[in-house]
Length: 522
Image (cartoon, rainbow, N blue to C red; front, side, top):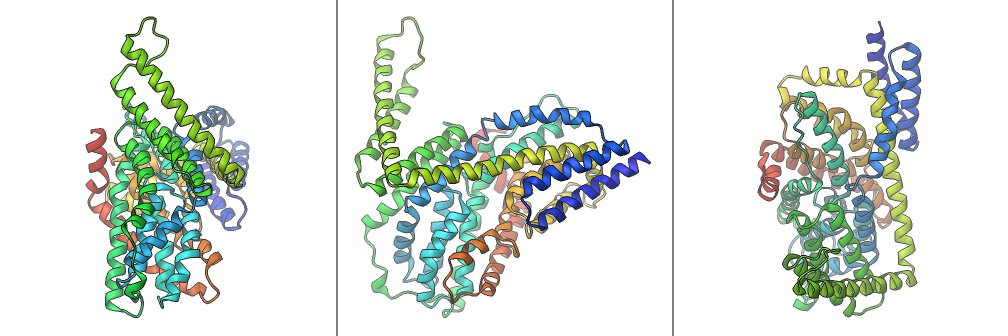
């Protein structure tokens, strides 16, 4: 009787969560409220032990002190600061003039700019709004079909969720790592293997570039099949000099190489690379607010000097009698650190005086607080759900699906895709993955491959109505002539392309696993 009641409560608890989210009430309160309510009901019915909640404080402490999760506010800061530095505007203008004379050229330029911004900012909202304000009027002015233009901008903006570095990858990596450890313990293995956010970044890179290729392939084919949908610009409007191209491309590419390259090369952890990105974004924003080349050059020279000295000499402090060469290297490193500090201090002063720094810090704090509050609420929800026997219920349901691991993964992907119509990626990630992750990974599924599949699937949540956030972002800045129906019609082909990318990655796991194995080993 108690087992049956517990089974009913865990199902009712999850159903209550889904219904509560649809009301539009803040998710963090729904998570904690439903957990406390059903924990009390389970305790009163004798099917839940309140002692399980004793695991909550250490889990919260572990979340708040996780070095990996420190990367979240740093990546958010980097993305918002870059959005304020107007890099996207320079990229859009330059790439639009470069590809404009080709049929569908403006759409191709929007996709390429979206990919570059994804690799340097990872903030979907900022990317969609910026391109909506700049690219959409230009596309409409050049007789682009409104639905095709809107779909292109929304889809390009979502690339920030799959192309690293990405905030969702940091969250997903931390949750998947915990799920993988639980799966190994459940299998009786005490030689625990872990996965890192860097491995997840490497795994998502090729599928992300594949999506960019699929987008451009569709845009070129559609534009050539129906020239009236995406006409070419006059040749005289597409002239752009080599210096303009380099001036627009070099800053984001240097930042991408510094952040993503250092992670994939094993030089820095994601958190360390995120701090480099935050500093680089501040320097670029300061250069835009008060044009001066010397701070950026000083910072680059200082960082290059530090890396070179650290690789050639022993820079450990506190040694009694270091060799003279090491002493000179330490002095050089101190000089480089001073130069970098001077450049960063100047950037902070300039951005503060321009009114940029305060807004960026405020937005970063708000987004970070929201993410961590939901992580804590999801931890409480997962504890109560497991205490009511929810894990056993999910395990039995997935095990009963025909097809073994492949059938279970297909079912989970279908659930995540369905939830994407109503929830955003953070909510899906922190609610669903802790529940199904340990069970799926017990079926000898590669955690990196599974994580990349989830990430591609989560990307669709930005495009699927009625709550697709990219649709809301673009609707808020679109000209009056653009109808909501244009948005919905425009995203249908790109959702199909995302599902095609999901299917290709599922059918060919090396797309997600080959690069992590090559960079980090088996």
